[in-house]
Image (cartoon, rainbow, N blue to C red):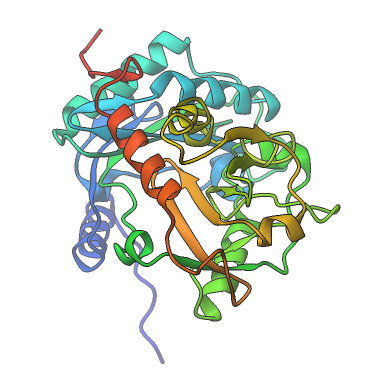
Length: 327
């Protein structure tokens, strides 16, 4: 007969979590929890209650800002989207915008690292396993400062390969709201990797380009226009929005003829000179193959490189960079 399952003490739970983190190394540096009322730096203690609505119902929103050279990039734009997502998800904010910003900054200081990422979540809180939030539950606010997502260097030097996913794009409300329910996105990326590819692309019901797993998609057309899909049915990427403001600088350099946000039929997109993935973690990466066929000449193009340079410069020397000083 197998041994009985042990009933653990609090000390046993902490010991088991520390062993888990020893076997599964993570680069989580600091974690704030409104439910704990403070910040922890031991990854074994970075926990959320199992009955939190974020865990068992996916009823939560999140966002991520970059940490570059000890400064936070584009925090206000990310907070704008975070608050808008919370409103659509009918989640009560845990405090004022200024209070959330202060918590994010203090957690970043405690983390003690100059480069990485800051991700923060808002849930309706714990209290039951029902479909609706528990009566009287307080919203949970969580902040994680970590090493960020790292992508292969060859994605930038050689380019990426993607496929049109067989999974349907999210309906508008769920696509434009940054919730923790990423099942279609996860399935799309898994499908692509199973076929030896890097990622996938959603098409909408009209055959227009949507977005990728956790990144936006853009194109440089044959007439040298930088075209981005409309944001009415996809997530409004903060990095895409910023690049659309920076990209006109490339017109004077002769790299593009203009910038356009519009519906992009898949057939027109496949004929593009360049195809790009854009996001806060990946920044700008060229796509050289879509559905086993080359984009342009099948090599990374000059616009992808130029946009990446513009973004990296903006991330270190612009009015959108803030130093995380305690308020």
